Length: 389
Ligand code: RFL
Ligand code: PHB
Image (cartoon, rainbow, N blue to C red; front, side, top):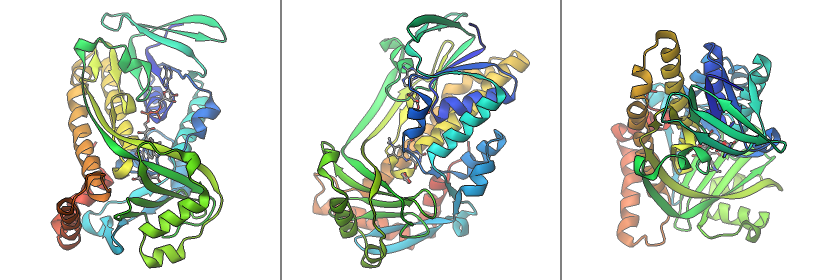
């Protein structure tokens, strides 16, 4: 088989890249290790930046997003029981949309089915070859049979644990990493959200987040130690802990119920440099990881593939390598700003095992500064709703 762009991974990065290229007449094949149902079963991101929503519109997959997505003008912080709302729309005229990653993925899969582009699910033992030359190839096994996919370019959109970044010679890549000493225990529940907007809570017992997927489905998180086991958390224990970290009003209004999903996500910051190796490009979680506190992971994946699609389309339309030559530098500049914001949100909102009384006062001062200064609040608004793509 032969194609122009071989895309490894059918997460949001791979599917959106496929869609943008497809719309421009650039042929792609997606190879995905898991089944379609498995990919759709992963509960992950929930908040789309304004630019991501606009990009999904441009990709022609915005219909359900506009019908079912919840447009939020702001978020609330709750610091040791003290609440403050940041009105992004009033501050900078921008909003975010709450729409689950599962739904974004479903919309992109649907569009790909309609267009007839090839996606190979349950492709095993994917391996990348000759991307330092003009004729890269990808090998994979499907139903026990080995196949070769010849292509012009390979897009590594296969997440943090994928094969693409691991295929790059060690001497050609540099990585930057911070692992946090805690994770997020999250539950999904078919009960109305406790508030209309998200509440990010800082408490000495640890961080908590009240989020949602719709008017009837809520998503809640509490910070737990890095080595915590999900089996140790009954629903009742989760609800008790969440209530203790919220202000009294919110705790009283919480509508609890049986969890329909419960999992622990570790927190990590990670960036690889560069993001182009000959004819291989890295995008999305394959290139970088952010802790979920700033809600940036899915949005960064979208901005990476927007830039990559533009570069590849330019290459085919104008026979110009300028876009692909500039890809890495262009996206890394935005990636590091999102890394900074996610790290900062994480550092002010969580309790660290070595947090001493000085650090606690600094966290409090960050909150007071955000609450009291319009300049500080605008900076939060600008970063949370998304820097320009
Ligand atoms: P994905 O989604 O991991 O998809 C990669 C795909 O590649 C496949 N794959 C392979 N395929 C073929 N061969 C191989 N060898 C392969 N190895 C892997 C995988 O099966 C998979 O299908 O990466 P992508 O597309 O880059 O998308 C990134 C986002 O999924 C991620 O950044 C976000 O979910 C992060 N995130 C959030 N992002 C936001 O923007 N807003 C949020 O509110 C938000 N909340 C979150 C989050 C992530 C979380 N977890 C679980 C880490 C909340 C949580 C709890
Ligand atoms: C979510 O709803 O899953 C969510 C929302 C905001 C975040 C992270 C996760 O910062």
